[in-house]
Amino acid sequence: MQEVVKSVVILGTGGTIAGTGPDPERSWQYRAAQLTVSQLVAAVPEFAGLPLEAEQVAQIDSKDMSWSVWQALGQSLKAHLARDDVAGVVITHGTDTLEETAYLLHRLVDGRKPVVLTAAMRPATARDADGPGNLRDAVRVVLEAARRGVGGVVAVLHGRIWAGAQVRKAHSCALDAFDAGGRAPLAQLDEAGQWHEAALEWPASGHAGWEVLNSPPPRVEIIHSHADADGWMVKAVLAYGRQHGPLKGLVLAGSGHGTLHQGLEAALVQATSMGVTVWRASRVARGGVSRREGDAFEACGELTPAQARVALMLYLSGV
Ligand code: SIN
Image (cartoon, rainbow, N blue to C red; front, top):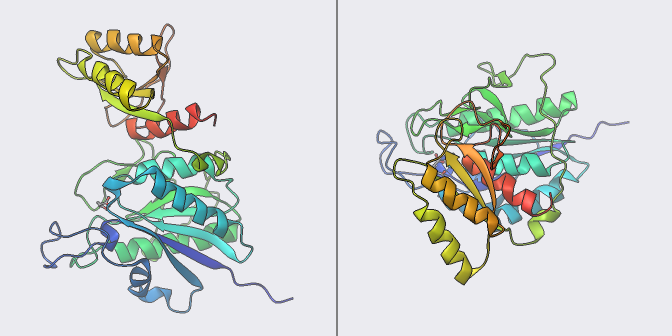
């Protein structure tokens, strides 16, 4: 029987990887989300002869990521992952909110096939553009993961494979911009984009399914603790919510181990008495927040505040 050659589907959402600028030497001057995903694929010589399909799901600077883009992405992913002739999916994304999309998808997918997010810190027109190499690596990781029979969400960036549930942007401009909150990458890739760990453990997927994306999300906002944080912001969002739709949740981006100013704490306690669910994360880059006896607010573990917002939206949606 002839072996079926399976495709890798590449879904484009925009970002710096699809960005262009007027001067290859001034890589900080550019506009994100200008090239189509088909153009990005055509720019990688190593793709010649590979069974790839490109689909443009969105074309945005990822600072503008929204529930509606996640809905479109979810719809497309669901359809492609169900196909017998697809080995896995690559998503090209902006770096700025990649950690939110990666975490969301990690919670939703069933882990049968690999889903790999990739991005770039330099636009496609930069002399030192990192997008083509990252995209090439991402496709190789999908093919290798499919060959090994492992699945789930990871991010492939700058020669490393990161767990989708843990990856986050840790530097605003370096080429090597991502980490996992202090945890090591799952694997390093060699020059040829291959990984050698015999038994790479992919994190277990959330299996929540795509259904949750069919409804509008519950409103969840992030509040920072800082000097003089006296609860003014909490009162403001509660008042706004009374007029424009209910506020359902708040994530605290606390100081240190998720600590918070006493004025802010009083306001958040009041918010909980009004039916708002409050979860506690940290604005510190590494270490996260663990649960302690007597805590007023649920601790978010190692999630960043932005990922914790996604987690709280899912929780409030019953997932
Ligand atoms: C974006 O997040 O879309 C722009 C920034 C980037 O991709 O590095």
